[in-house]
Amino acid sequence: GNIKPPTKTKDVKPVYPAIAQSARVQGVVIIEATIGPSGSVQEAKVLRSIPLLDAAALDAVKQWVFTPTLLNGVPVPVIMTVTVNFTLQ
View 1 (cartoon, one colour):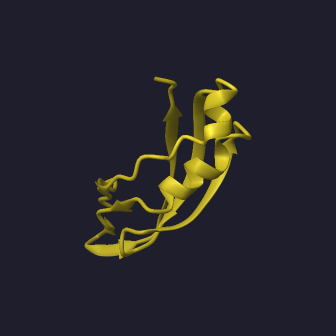
View 2 (cartoon, one colour; view 1 turned 60 degrees about the vertical axis):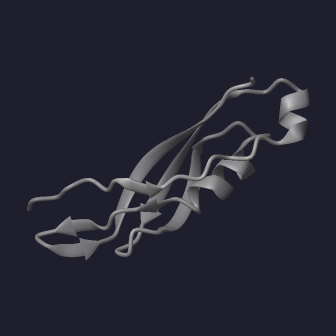
View 3 (cartoon, helix red, strand yellow; view 1 turned 90 degrees about the vertical axis):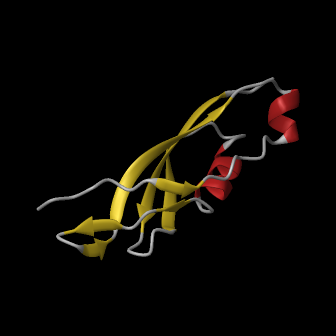
C-alpha cells in the first residue's frame, strides 16, 4: 500500500529535570511511540534509557501530535521510534 509517514504537528519540548542538570547528565533517550489513527500518541516506551531523563522524555512525547497515518486513505495506528535529546546549556 501507499503509506505516508506521520508529520509532527505539535511538538512539546521535555522539561529538563533539575536533578539531571545538577548531575550534568545529558544525552539521547530513544522512545518507541504508538501513534493512533487520530494522530495522538497512544503509548510510549523507552528503548534506550538515561534513568534521570526517561520520565521527562516520556511526558513530552505523550503530548506530541502527528498527522494521521493513512494506508490507502484510511487512518491507521503506526509505531515509530523517536529520539529526545537532552543537552546542557
